[in-house]
Structures are given as structure tokens and as C-alpha cells.
Length: 262
Ligand SMILES: Nc1ncnc2c1ncn2[C@@H]1O[C@H](COP(=O)(O)OP(=O)(O)OP(=O)(O)O)[C@@H](O)[C@H]1O
Ligand SMILES: [Mg+2]
Image (cartoon, rainbow, N blue to C red):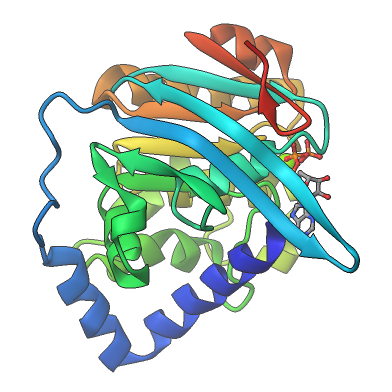
């Protein structure tokens, strides 16, 4: 859902540039309200009877219908399906970037519907990394600044070192000062991956993470994703058309016209 994603990206930018909002966001990031602690036995992700409908002139379009599944911690899951089957929409709903028309999503046992926008932003900051299909890098920030941003938003003191290290790891150590418009599509994709990894999230959502990469670079990114899963126990949820990547995952979920194929 491109609209909500755009809003999210712009908001992140304005938060970074406004010290008052930025402090508020830091407080938000550190606050642990009631229900913030993960339920001990809860799955990393529980999706129940999820539906997404949008009103178009003269008709209602159903994008997702009755989608339900659970993902255990440390699992690796590929979401596959034809173009337009609802994969990106499902990913946005799971990460709390968009609201469902019906049904629910819970991360670590915490229902996203019980949280307001600040609460969802807190949960995302604490545990979620997201790689957008269209990257959503902030155009006014360099590659390094884009990757430092999530660390700044959560109030880390040490931001430059870890951001440089991860950019080095994705092969962009020589492109730190480049703005997104000065990077190729594959390079932008790698900056987006670095931005999602840098906080070492417990849950990583990636929409076509190898979609714009040549075979060699794509393979290196796949290795990096699974290294993160093996070393840090990161739960991976990947949308992909790449058979090789889908096969590497422990599980595959297939969407067909907004419904999960049994
Ligand atoms: N805001 C919106 N308003 C109207 N229709 C929408 C909106 N967002 C998505 N859609 C429609 O919902 C369907 C699913 O979109 P989605 O982006 O989730 O597909 P996808 O499976 O990720 O496809 P692709 O593989 O091409 O990326 C598409 O037919 C799309 O046109
Ligand atoms: Mg998509």
C-alpha cells in the first residue's frame, strides 16, 4: 500500500529533523507500557482472519480475505504468489505499517490493534526491520545517514560505527556519502537492507530483497539474511519470486488472489 508507506517514510524524516519530536520518539522507544513484555509462549507472529478491503469508485476491492497463520520465533518463511496476489499488502499489515479491515496481527503476543500509532511505532522500533519493495530511502540523506537513522531514532549513542560496518558488509563501504539518486537500483536495495539489519531486529520483513540484484550480489544478500537468522535468531519473513531463496526458507506461504492456498 504505497500511500501509507510514503507517509511512514516522510514521518521518519520529519522526526529526525525535529529535535522535539525526536526526543518524544526516544521516550516512546524506551517506554514499556502495559502489555509490552512479550508473552512467554507467544509465537513471533500470529495472523488471524486478516482482511483488507479498499473502496474504489462504485465498488469495493478485496485485497486480502481470511488470511491466518502463525510463525514461530526463529522461523524463516517465504511468501510467494503471482503479482497482485496481496503479498506486499500482507507484509505491511504484519509490520503494523497499515491497518487491516478485519482480523488481527500480534507480534510476540502483542496485538497491534490494541496500540495507537505511537505504540505501533514503538513496537516497530524495538523489534521490526522492514525492507520495502521500492526501498523508501530518504532522498535528502546519504547512504550512511539513511542507515544511521533507525539507531538515532531509538536513541543509540553509537550510530556511525555500526552503520558503517553493515554498509561494508553489503559491499557499499565506498558509497557512504552517496545520496540515493547517485546509487544504482541494486545499491539502493542494499542500503535498504543495511537499514533494516542495523538494529538487529528480532523480526525482519523483506519485500523482494533480491529483486534488483545480479545473481552474485543476490546470493551474498541471501547468505547475509540467513546468517542473521542463524546468529541472532532473527525471524525472517520474505516476499520473493526467487525460487532459490524460497527453497532456502523453512516454510512457504502461497497467496492466490488475496487468499492463502492451503
Ligand atoms: N491502496 C490501494 N488501492 C487500491 N488497490 C490497491 C491498493 N493497494 C494495493 N492494491 C491492489 O491490491 C492488489 C495487491 O497488491 P500488492 O501490492 O499487495 O500485490 P503483490 O502481491 O505484492 O504484487 P507484486 O508481486 O506485483 O509486488 C493489487 O491488485 C493492487 O492493485
Ligand atoms: Mg509487492
